[in-house]
Image (cartoon, rainbow, N blue to C red; front, top):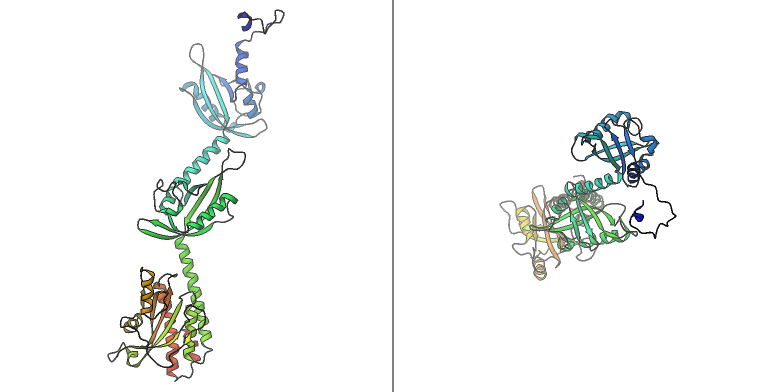
Amino acid sequence: MSASRRSGTTDELGPDEPEPPERDGADLLAALLDGMDAALCAFDADGVVTHWNREAERILGWSATEAVGRQGLAGWAVRSADAEEVEARLMSAMSAPGRQVHEFALLTKDGGRVLVRTQSAAVRGPDGKPAGVYCAFSEVHAQIDLERSIALSEALFEDASWGVVLVDADLRPAVVNAHAARLLGTGRTTVLGRPLGELLSQGVEELESALTHVLAEGAPPAPAEVWVAVRTPEGERRRCWRSAFLRLSSPLAEEPVPLGVGWMFQDITETKQTEQEASLLRFRTNQTHRAARAAAECEDPVEAAGVHLDFALAGFADHAVIDRVVGAGRAADSDEAGPVRLVRLAATPSGRPGPSLLDGGAGLPVRYGERHPALQCVQRAGSVRSSAGSVPEQEAREWALARQWPEDTRYALCTVLRSRGRTLGVVTFLRGSGRAGFERSDTLYAEDVAARIALTLDLAEATGGAGATGAPEASGEG
């Protein structure tokens, strides 16, 4: 009798309607197994397949009729070469407590291979002894892909040799790996949620513009090189970072919803500096040879010296002057040297482009103070670097004017003009506030230019003013 009849209710079944047939335990078990989302199979103690549900049929293609009654899985659901190992794993659940989890490949009816994850456990008989094994299995491609993605993310954030930062839609770091924290000069948690402007003093606008573009348009086709200045407890550090960007969108939304930007970068400062130095060296060498050819066309040696100065100035300094030693001071390195007197020979225009302006016809000495860098340069017979330092604008202007340099001058490099053991003068290169100070490599270049100018002037003197045309060519070969 049905449940409704036993309860005394006749609303659903009329008195003349037949009662549903009673179902035995085997039918109920089969219905239960077929209704489950997981693929299920079972084996008796001898390894014969006793159960095979519809989900197992869907995954592998073998029907229950084809599967039930087979001895093991060899040759049909598992490759023969792998069958012994697979069946040993499954049947080991009979003697092991709890459930056993394994991963291996099964064969489909059409010959394909499916990677599955199994959970198997012993089936007990009425006497409590193991009577077989049941096994639940499912495809694990999606699970493995997820685990691989998680493993990749963890590896990127823990072991990667480049910086990885996840920037949210407000352009603030949300996740930072250890390498990126080191490059930013801070801790991994300290940087979270802070504006980039608090971490970088230069390059912030360019970096934020790139991040905004990626959020709106997607990733650029190639990495970008960004120069930044990083704020650290030891001061600012200027670095070049090769950066790649990826737009992150939610995979759960029907429409792409931007979650932020994945920013990956490497520090290539040393490489870029080496490239820049090599490029600068090539440019300066080219300028030197061009100056030699142009100076060879000049009949006046002073004009030739001005040509060398003009070519040297490009990309090197904002202004330059040549002062020549006159009187006893030109032998300042000898015992008979007298007071040093300098006469302006040539100067580049200040504040406007154009060739050097030749001077010195009147022979009037330049009124430099006793501690002027140009006089120190002659006295030492070597190069002298000078700068205004980090002083207010007005003080820096006064510093430049007191030395008879253009008022926007902040850095100076004085190099002596010497030839055949004699001091002929000094050439002074000047840079304004928008430039960096002179470095050791700049001094070497200035000394090379000074040597060429000195040779031009010295050969002109040796020939009494004639033959100046050949002097610059000789300097070019030097």
